[in-house]
Image (cartoon, rainbow, N blue to C red):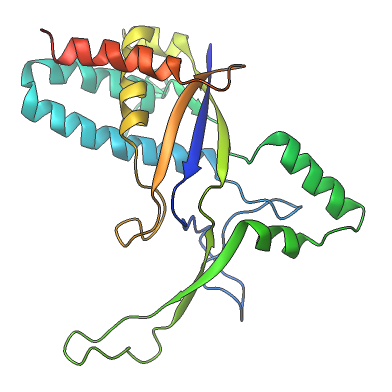
Length: 234
């Protein structure tokens, strides 16, 4: 098993809706834990990585069609393919993304001991944004279209543990080196996330680290450089 860490830094306010709202407050609520700290489901992150990978594969097919089959095979092994069997299960396992453990523990202690309320913690990391649909002809807001969504504030940092099951790669005859090169390329190109990401929200910076290592991005740089050398040989 290859263990990695994914760091996600929000560069703009971002909406990660959990699929429901709170009556009288917001139409789209963010996922948060018992202490009020926001987090992102691992399956949500994996889906966004898969979407970014599809974009990368499309670009590769246009620029280097002779290489596309190799990286499509690596993508299916790493992130899974629709309708795959047990043998073709995705090798990449993504844990939920949390704020830093020490901060999360401090907030949980404060809530448990009555120093803070859960809603106060949530309000410290988030804000509520309202928006409405506009009539294209008159330019006026349409009736009954006002919606409120909670956003996670910019500069919030999340960490998620990633695990690559090498046995699943072997079962699909994909090398760990190819999987790591592709993952590094996908993470480095990931720039937008969440709802309304095409309307000014959801700008992010993502980086990949070896498990236990913090403070440098040499891991992603190493494999990204190797990926570039493979797809753009001199």
